[in-house]
Length: 317
Ligand SMILES: C[S@@+](CC[C@H](N)C(=O)[O-])C[C@H]1O[C@@H](n2cnc3c(N)ncnc32)[C@H](O)[C@@H]1O
Image (cartoon, rainbow, N blue to C red; front, side):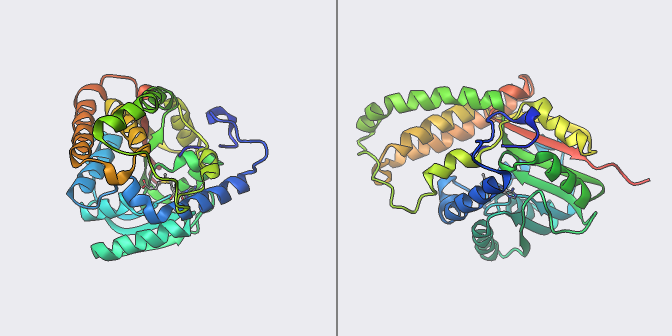
């Protein structure tokens, strides 16, 4: 899911003329409210050791160093808690506040936090209008959310306002414009070979949707931006942030993941052999490691599928 904005310079897909920023926010709320119930299983969100190590690794990569401990954190578009709950379990954050425009997502997050025995404050909020006092957090973070926000300069001004002097802003999992285009190749390939693949693994075609799926018409609307690295840096600098760092992650892992996800979407989940699931899971982790060790430090951020941004608010005085 990716999305529109008022600042033309970072818009890739122009805002559909019929939809105002308010309508886009409403579409995001409705889409994610419906997605909330099955979100964790759909995206394989994990709150165990794997989830903790994946999220901690992303924070480390975004910062370019070992993370410190953040006493008060605010997550924007927290969804079901993938980042905050894993970072709490990994001991990187203390008091956590999770905000999201979708109350449904926050309900699922509360259930996850309860199951994990974690105490988290939740607050329904649009990123462009945060209901928090000035300078009340040490870390403002988010994963896969910036591309849904219509007015990014306004949202970044809010992140800066609620951060304490010297505080950190960190976002990961944002779609890169070129990475997004490159990922269409494995998706197209997988669509073409899907019937052959289903025959090979002995799976029938996917059953018709049961109505519990997020509205397909909204899916094309909720993703507003895909970014070039320089555009992300510019919006953070314009809001007054310093030490702005934009990096890329996942190339081979992403192609592999999208190809498999596209194939799987065409098959009856009941028929999916266990060996296939294991291959898809292990293959993804292996390629993620290959990306990290070999490619991420050598290739330009723009070609990776995901972009990460880290920066600091100016210290006081
Ligand atoms: C792709 S999901 C990511 C959820 C979670 N961060 C994760 O990584 O699993 C995007 C989230 O951003 C939220 N969102 C969309 N537009 C928003 C806005 N304007 N302000 C705050 N949250 C928003 C959605 O409701 C959704 O929970």
